[in-house]
Length: 197
View 1 (cartoon, rainbow, N blue to C red):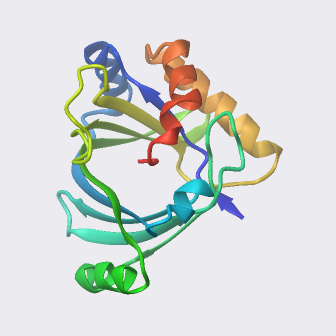
View 2: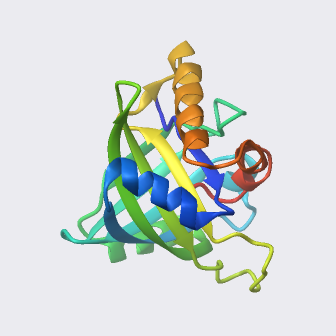
View 3: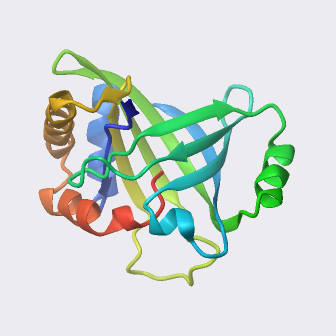
């Protein structure tokens, strides 16, 4: 079973962390993600820690849209989940199909991302730096951070002891960029209750 072996961190000092990342990986690739998460009126998916998302990505290449289903998390520390996704040729039809099946948009938001690829500790890694607009269902709040860093291996991990090793390696590298351990811990214990990005 493929799992998204990723860590996410709130970035409280974006200038220095971004500078360290770009020194290691270069300027990155700018993209805009437009995400819509669906659930039924009873919140069945959310209550079961599952996610159903349509994401449209705008960047330097052709615009692409993917449908993603994420199962319940298999690793509590990082929130890693089994993930299945497929490209969509007709995004509008996919939205209508989900609505026709009884699902409705639960939350929708836009993320401005910059993606990086590098090799660390002999392993290919991917990093996504993003700033998220406030979700349209949430009032603007100064205490809601808008800068995040997502770190993950270039390939999906398997549900084995390797998943734990991957998280340890990724965590160490994220800390080396200047992200505090408290930021990782806060995200893992609290912010993963928000939809994953």
